Amino acid sequence: QVQLAESGGGLVQAGGSLRLSCAHSGRTFFSGYAMGWFRQAPGMEREFVATISGTGAITYYEDSVKGRFTISRDNAKNTVYLQMNGLNPEDTAVYYCAATIDAGSYYYLEYEYEYWGQGTQVTVSS
Image 1 (cartoon, rainbow, N blue to C red):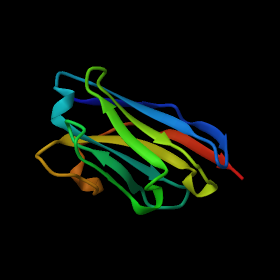
Image 2: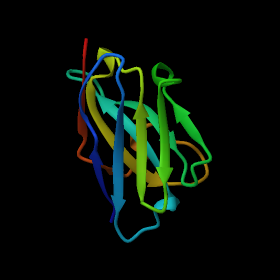
Image 3: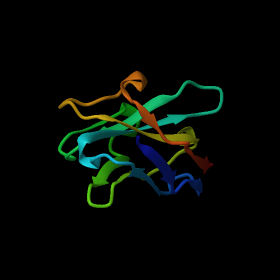
């Protein structure tokens, strides 16, 4: 069983930065999982943000965050990160991390992920 716990959310002014963390625990090898970040704004569907392969060699981003957000992972610490720079009010959402067995591709669809964290709120003020 895999447990995921996000942290690092908060309130930030437009143009500011935040770094989200997601700690992975359970009797599994973290490097065997591809990790993703999704977000859900009020009244909206949950949407893909970024994903990273088990080794960290492959990353993929949603178009609106490219060049502003960076996903990374530290397999020694069983943690994945989302560095968010140049935040704007449209980035306000609950951010979720998710995990799926890495079968050598990249994953950006919700149904591809088996495990989810509880989410962390990010609020960007204008």
